[in-house]
Image (tube, rainbow, N blue to C red; front, side, top):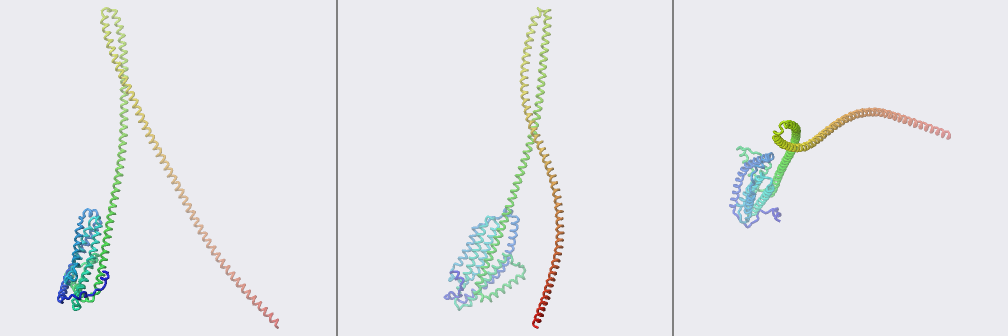
Length: 546
């Protein structure tokens, strides 16, 4: 129902009970004209602001390109995101101010206040949109985590712009309803002119903003001549608007609403394109991050592989060192065995020396007994006691020596046995080492034989491949020659067939000619025979008749 009421044309005189003076209408018209002049000046200022906005837009595009090139640095150097609550509070305050301004009853408002509100509504709209766009741009430069909040802000911007435009439309309708009776139609027409002019100025501002966003707004020079010319053009436009305001009252509102809807659509399209560009940038940033992560993973894998190779090389070096140590130990053990063998030889020499000493002592004892017998025969009585004492002392000493020598021999025999055991163990170790070395040599020889066999098989395979290749080449050449011969035969046969075809065609032509000639001859013979036959029959018939 409300949409139907809005679409229906409303009368200019909706409240005939209200009676205003002409002075009030004139004052409002004068105020409206002054407001229009102020609006023109503001439009000139807005041109400069729009130029500045265009420069900021170009700067933003360059910043976006730089961000696309150096996303890591920009992500590190992002400014902290402003509080969304404060921005939403500002927007809510602006909306509340507009709603409070529109919440007054139409009957209690004066026409001057309505005109003032109509003049202030586009300004408030521009201020709100500028604030929200700046907040959105500031949030766009932040992290990608807050993209959803940026979209919420943009939706809020669109909703606020729609609400403000709807409120402006309601204000226009209220101003039309507050026009008094038919007696003051001239003043009402002046007021309607003012409303139309405000609408035109607002539309021009919206179009300029859209042109700046699309990048099609033309750069204006800062020369005085151009500024004066633009000012004159704007004055001429205002005069034309005052002249054509009478017949544009009816159609002006509908055109205004249509243009506003078109502007909204264009704004939505621009926001959609901006969102697409942001999505593309985010996707490219994500791709770059993925590429960097893959590069880091590849570097990590390369480092891991290099570390594995280094560990393998270190293990090989350790094994080589262990082999060298084993060889050194084997050499030391061989040296120890040789030294122990030398010790055993020295022990054997000492035992031989001890045996020789025993023999010498026995010889000496025998000689001493002989001398003693001879001396006893001489001095038996005088020297028996001394000799007995000496013999006892010598026997005791000899026994002691023999015992000491036996103990030493026992020790030496034990040492020799232990040395023999150690030598036996060392010989076993040497045998095991020799066996391992022989096994390694056998493996090496086997590997060498295998390598020789592999090389021989490779050579044989290469020779066979060469033979096969030569055979293949020969077969290829033979096949090529055979194909060439076949092609030649085919060409010859085709030539012969073509000649035979020609001969057959000629023969067929001759046969056809002959058949045609024979048919002609037969037809001539038949004709002649028929003529003769008819002549004969005619002659016969005539003869009969006669």
